[in-house]
Image (cartoon, rainbow, N blue to C red; front, side):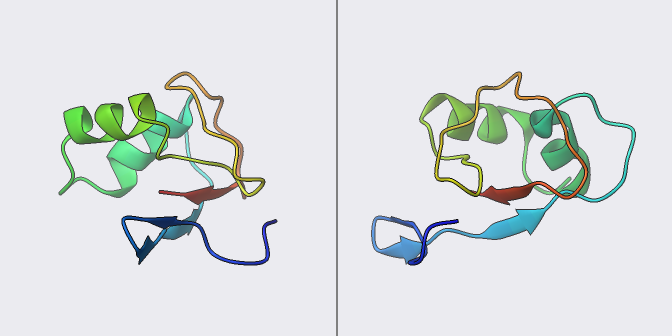
Length: 73
């Protein structure tokens, strides 16, 4: 995990640990866990490389869901 929090336009990235659930992809989980954020907005964040794992690697829209994974967005 990176020592310093990743930033976007000077704002620290948010962190979210994926909870247990029925989802197939990280995208599906984020859409379900944050219903106030439209799926299209999540899709845009993935496409721009703004959704990342704990190693600061950009996640694909199809990234598989894994309970306990640390996600930054």
